[in-house]
Image (cartoon, rainbow, N blue to C red; front, side, top):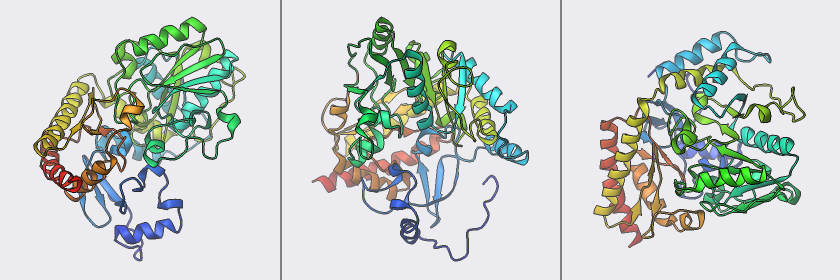
Length: 435
């Protein structure tokens, strides 16, 4: 273990069940992000006390191979020495200044170097803040109101983009607009993924996950992203890639490098913070300089460009060299293969699509999904059984059937062997439960 946490209070329960009950008395639903709840799979969440490499450890001392990896934010492995050293050094110099820092400049320059479409980069605190800022920026730059999004794409908890959603919204079956005024989504058009919509001159921007990683990992069809680029150019709309998940996970330059399509704006999060909270918007100079203080589109944040997050992010990106991605892709392919083999041996219909370093899940006899309607036909009851059987065998998946599986540098061949052994039994258990 790299360093030790301060001891927990002596009266704090060492039971997942008891801690969760206590959490429910202080936190709505016992969780601070809805997708961490076990509502979709049933049961009580495991409460993580610490993590290292490919593993997380709960308060009862159980160890799990972690395929959640903070929903993609962790790529080097938990408590990686380079990340913890960077955070420790940064914290010793102060945790927040409310003033510009060299660290935020260096991280912005590193993003620019890796992603040529990002002539300018503005750092902020989360992926949700990044997408909400991108909405405001696109409308402010174009003078138009309409935003186009795709069924099953998830862009964070931004009112204008919650007219429909994947990830937690799909998993929980909640109305996409609950608590959102009708006016907030009046200018939002939701269309099928993998179909190029016909736009008009009222469209400010098209927002898209270049790989739909919140509905089981759905790849873009050939020509889809290129078609969006051409259609946006035709009507003068901005093309916005939400690379909060794919950014620096699919490759050095993210999905836009992988598919050879240049967006006008890109939103980032997760990997660029090294496991700490962060977000960013990058893009064309003329669009980005519409942001205040140069332009009329307001953005500000007390903790934007936080020195701990930028230090951790720079440390992570420094280690994500071009030779890392073939290794991660090979591990993702092997993970999909062992899961496929386990399910096939148990007679459990399932597919595990792979896009670069991302692995998806689909339980059912249908074809690999290409849109949200197909993705929603996954057998959630089978997933619940598989999820709990894997957890009992020491492998933690996300508690929802529409999330990606994330591998990182901590998932060695030995760790993948552990997953393979667990999956064989889990598939048999899931088959038995369905029969």
